[in-house]
Image 1 (cartoon, rainbow, N blue to C red):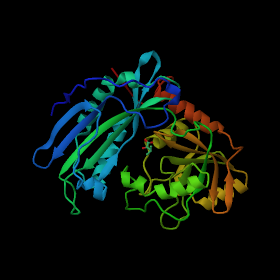
Image 2: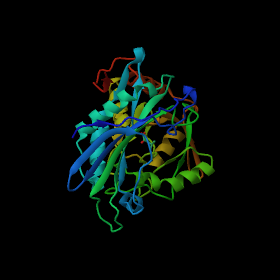
Image 3: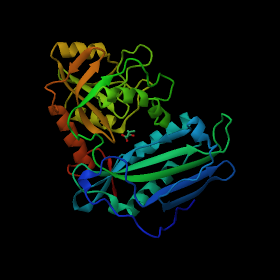
Amino acid sequence: MDLEFIKRETLKDKPKDETKLGFGRIFTDYMLMMKRDNTRGWFYAAIEPFGDLSLSPAALVLHYAQEVFEGLKAYRGGGGRILLFRPWENMKRMALSAARLSMQPFDSDFLLNSIYELVKREKDWIPAAPGTSLYIRPTYIGIDPFVGVAAAEEYLLYVILSPVGAYYPRGLEPVDIFVENNYVRTVRGGTGTTKAGANYAISLLAGEEAHQKGFSQVLWLDGVEKTYIEEVGSMNIFFKIDGEIITPALQGSILPGVTRDSIIRIARDKGMPVSEKRISIYEIEEAQADGKLEEVFGSGTAAVVSPVGKLVWGDKTIVVGDGGMGQVTRMLYDTITGIQYGRIEDPYGWTYELK
Ligand code: COI
C-alpha cells in the first residue's frame, strides 16, 4: 500500500503564544488516515487535511466502544532536531490493545513510517518553548454500520497531531490525588493493560467527583480488594520509601507505560534500588506515619514525571515529603526530558531522529 498525499487549500494559523498551548485542543493541518475492510484488507493510506469524519450513526465504535489509541510525542531538540521517544513501543502496545479488543491487526512498521512522514510534513507545528511538544494520537476504530454485538469488519486507523504544553495546568507543581474507594477501573483479565478509550470513559465519574472535592486525579486501587495500588489513569505511579523506589508490578490490570519502563531503567542505572511489586495503600500510610514516605510521582507520556503532593484516602490525608518536588523526582524528570529533547546523551537507543 502506498501512502498518498492529499493537499489542503489553505493552512491554519499556528499558535502565536507557545507558552499557552495547554493540552490537546489545537490540531495541525493534516492527519494520517488508513482504512481496512475484510474484503480488501488495508486498502487506503493517506496524509489528508485534518477534518471531520463521516460515520454511520450505527458505526460499531459508537455503540460498543471498539476503539484503542496511543499517545506519543515529537520533541524539538537543539538545532531544530526532531526527536521521537521509543515510538516503536507505542506501536507494539497499540497492536496488543487492538488484539484485546478483537480488532484486525495492522502493519506496525507501515504505521510508524507513515507517522514519521506526517510529523515531517507538520514539523513547523512542533513547538519550541520549554516543556512543549507535538502530541501524536493514533486512534483505531471499528466502523461497520451494524448494531449487533460483533467485532468490526471495517476500520479506520487515523493519527492526529496536537502541539501541547504541560498536561496539568499547574505544570510541575505537585498534584493532590484522591484515592478511589468506591469505583474500580478494571480487574485482571479486563482491559486495564490496554489503551482502550472505554477505560477512560469509565474513569470519568470518579474523576469528576474527585475534582469537585478539589483533587486533580484519582488513584485506582485493585478492583477486588480495593487495597493494592494500581495507577492514576493518566499516569503510572511511583513511591520512594526509605530510599527505595517502588511501583506497582504489572500483574494484568495496569497500563505498561513507556515512561514507566524508562524511569525504572534510568533509576536502576543511577544505582537506585527499584522494586516492581504489589504495594497496598496501608503500606503507604504506614510509611508516611514512620516518616519514610519520601517522594511520590506519576509518569506518563502526557504527564511526563509529575510530583504528587498528597494522597487522600477516606478520612486520612497522606502528605508526601515536604509537599514540594522531591530530589529523585526532579532528577528523573530532568534525565528523561533531557533524553527526549536531546539535551543529554541517550545511552539506550530510545530516541529516533526524524530527518
Ligand atoms: C498519555 O500519556 O499519552 C495518555 O494517553 C494519557 C492521557 C492523556 C489519556
